[in-house]
Length: 188
Image (cartoon, rainbow, N blue to C red; front, side):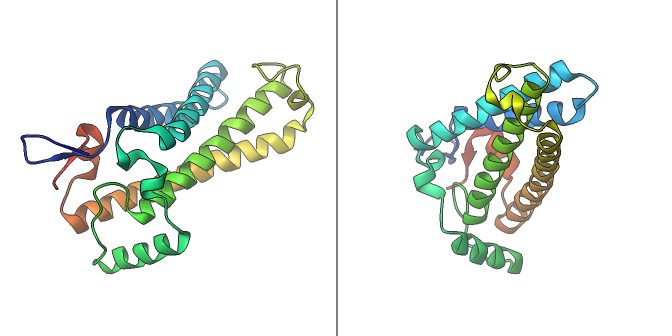
């Protein structure tokens, strides 16, 4: 975290912010192009997979400590207790991810990875993509399709919960967390 002259602290590095908003764009692009525009859908899905892989790597080598998994990942019990305090209106403020937000990051990354992996596998069963002509192409397409759709919808539910958490935390701590993810800066 670096200080600047505007009395705000840089919390989110540019790569985390670009990752975040790119993920938003490509998830909804993939979600709403489903069967109608398979080329756009699959390209968005591959992009999501690459974004998730980037974020997993960046979680270990980031230049801002708030992006490092070692800085914000906690035990699920800690996240649960934090969420209870937040719902009561008296949770501690964090500059980076709070424990509930950290749990959400992990759930979203996991769900997105499974969704993209199932999508690539499903694409392979149809003879397309870089997994075509591998053992993935021989997997049962019906089951893979069901898993792909389940995790896409589960991810959407996680996103809704994430946005709700951002709104709740923004009100509780009297700060605009959406703007912080745009500018990278928060009040100290």
